[in-house]
Length: 85
Length: 546
Image 1 (cartoon, rainbow over the protein chains, first blue to last red):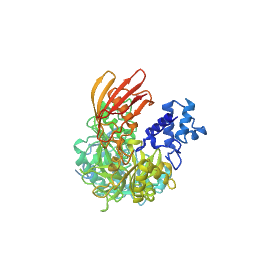
Image 2 (image 1 turned 135 degrees about the horizontal axis):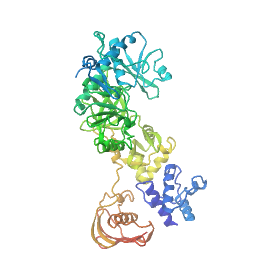
Image 3 (image 1 turned 90 degrees about the vertical axis):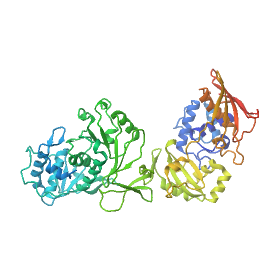
Image 4 (image 1 turned 135 degrees about the vertical axis):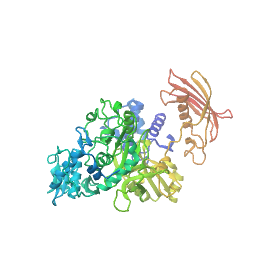
């Protein structure tokens, strides 16, 4: 799981063009979208969604209520990806 | 170069003043004006609206004879006319105007003409309601003389795709050509196809982005390209300008101006976005907000007129337009006020000064250059640039929508300003220029899918920055990253995935070192093997990617 988490962190850093940050700087359990933590926004979520689809070939249903939960943290995203592929 | 009215009054009767679709002579215009002038007497306001440049010119001459002002509505819908004060006006339009068949005006009928005419234009104001703008014919003549001085030797008979009811069309299609004796098309073309056969290298085309962004896909414009193409009214986007330059074989001449000021500056985009050159009679300046101000001889009064566009002046007297001075930017389709963002930023206890800007290189993302307070400096040192930027983003949540919160941050000891103490967008954007991610290297040997190179790691390499604040060392993951980038360049190979196998990080690498890198591409399995060696022979890292 740690390997997948690191991959996802690297993907997030890449697609969001985050600077001055390495995968080690992101706690897999921290909230990606809240006003603490990374405080990403809906456009960021869109880009991460596209990144996940491209990298893992997973379809994300934007209408699905659980999608938001999957995107909560790097860990939940890794669990989602692992379950889907 | 004679005045507009005297040119009309003194031209030989058989001189063709207007052409296309049918020629109209100076004598016919004088005869039409002489017949029209008595109808213009009285107190009722005079509104003129006609598709014909010849009839419009006759109305101008008649107004000079009757010594009456003229208003130029943009169209003649009843509600619009009422809104612009045209209720009860005498409307001179295509239904009431007709061209005289006489070959000249009867002798003595044109005496006593005024040498100037008051003109009223209507533009859509900032609220959307029509705004009255008063100009005088003599000001349009002054501008025509400036145009002749700048472009006269390149200009020929005029064709057009724009109306003369607006100031640009009136000057470029009527006042300037009449004053210089160049024939001008009576009717503007609505479609490019109507110009087929009327263009050519001696022709000057008066056009606008409406037509220049919609070049006809089928009609062959290249073989009949006009020698000079003018565009005004709004900016011609660079891609459209380049497309036009390719079709016409020469760039479009864009004119920046407004009804209030007339033409201010011009440019030709031959290779890309070009700065603007002010006309020689125009003095451009900047107001306190960095907005363009202009003083022209076509304006009444001495005070420079604010244009509402922010500019960056260049050392050679030209300038670049930077967008509207109200500093509204579209970010992901939403309007964001940069001023509002800066106010929210400077309200934070960590921030002393802030400049908000957008970054065209990063899909127009919102960014901030920030000068910190002592509290901010301490927080930056404690948390590092990335976390601190994220914390500021979170701290703005009370005041700003997510889209209004900067994504990219630069923390500077002093806000960069130019010699006049002004912030320059180019200086601010330069802070976000991408630092090269591939360090300098040289290939030492190459055998099949294996390459060996010497890689220099300068101290300013991006991977040394920010990660370990006290001790700059090369992060292990960046060695993997550089191996992939260099492998793409030297072997033309990208691993099938970013999976790492048997990767070991063994020794520390410091700024300024020169390392030995060996890469082997396994194209069948989509894998890249790498090994970094330090100068002392120690392995820094090695492994398999993909």
